[in-house]
Image (cartoon, rainbow, N blue to C red; front, side, top):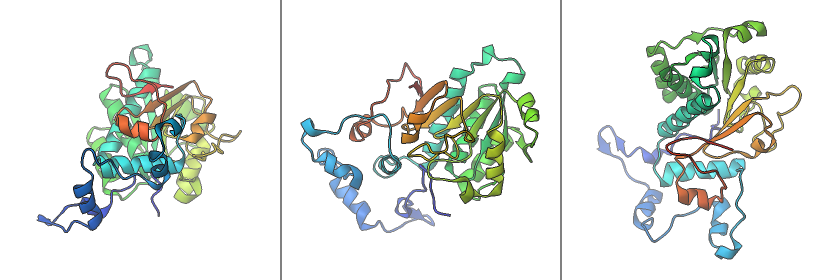
Length: 297
C-alpha cells in the first residue's frame, strides 16, 4: 500500500551505515553537504520555491490551514533538511496529543469512570501517534485501553505496540457492536484510525466497521490530525453520517478540512516546527504559553 501518512518513511539515503560500514552517499545528499550552509539558504519544495523568490512586499498572505501538498512539503522539510526522524515526529505528536486530552479533561475533575480512555488506532502513521498518545495518557494516570483492529507490520508500529503491552495497557480483541456498552465503559474515545489522504476502503473492513461504531457514540471523541474519513482538503466526511469530534488536535499545522471543524476545542500540536519553516509556509499559528506543547485555536 502506498504511504499516505504525513510522517512517511525517510528516504533510503538517510540510512548512512549498512552492516557497520559507511554506505555511499548519493549526489543529492552531497549537494546538501556542500551547498546547504548558513547564508546559502535552503532548497525549497516546488510548491514554495517560486514564493521564496518573490519580493518581501509580494510575500503570500499568512494562512491558518495547509493543503495536503503543503503538509507533505512541510514534512519533507523536517525530515530531510532538519533531520528529524520519523519516530521522533511520531513521539512528539503523540505526547502533544495526550497533553491536549489533559487540557480538555483534567484528571482532578474526572470521576474514576471518566478517566478511562479508549484509543482506537489504525495501521498507518496516525495509528502510531495514537499508540504513543495512549502510552503518555497512562503516564499521566489516565486509564487507556487500545483497540487496534488492523495491525501494521511496520517496525515502528511493532515497537510502539510492545511498549504499550509492557506497560500493561490492555488491548481489546474486538469492539462491541452495542454502542451503549462502550458509552458505559469509557469516559472518552481518541480517534487515531485514519490520517490525511487515507479512506476507510483502502484500509479494509475492520476500520470501516470501527468508524461506523464511533459515529454512534455519545461520549466525547478526540480526533488526531483530521477526523477519520474526512477529506483532508474539503472536510467532505463532515456529513450527517460522518464523525463529529468534540476535540481536534491538528498535528504540526491544521489541514484545510479543519476549517469545517465545529467541535468545542481545537488544538495545534506543532511547537517543534522551527520558526523559519513556519514563515516559509506562511503559517499564522497561535503562540504557545510557557512550556506548553499545544496551543488552542
